[in-house]
Length: 257
Image (cartoon, one colour):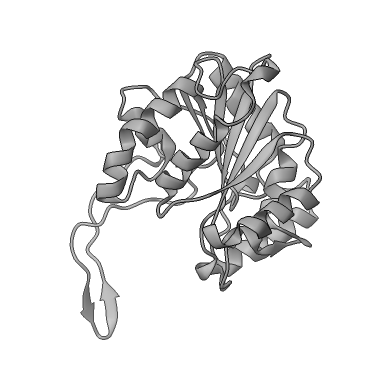
């Protein structure tokens, strides 16, 4: 592929829903924390020029130690995340610009760079998913999102919930065509100039409204099309205790999905 690849690993979220008082990225999975798994997966990615890890401000030293213990071969650094995910990604992108530009690598904000945004909570995302996203960006797609098909029927809510016989009831509305819907995952991949421009423009909205749900939405607001590539069930987001149990089984069975 021959293009410089940069990655922001977002890891500043809390582990409250997992029952963990600290950062989610430090929750243990099969003997190592989620962040360790996420960073090690990137190790064989060809062309990786630098990785920035966004961490809670009070845990910078701890996250740095995790990265050091992982004995990573690629350049990396840890920066403090922000109050929202969008702000954390913005700070991570700025951190990518600090990697030495005298090494012959294309700068992260250049149109020829490939920039990945990845959630540490998707700790078991396979290397092949990173590679698919990178190949799609390299082919000329400005914004690429890995996604999986829905297995459940989805219904739209038609009104406010109410209670009858101590049971919460919500009226149902429209049923969208499931074949046209996808569950999006990470890493999301972008041409460097596109994702930097999107986050620069999105800063004011982030402060006013709490930010976009994901980075591809910011890019779409600039008028760029988004494209899907195949995702993986192994790239599940670990949010609740049951997710962690399933992820533990997946980690112990690397050839199953």
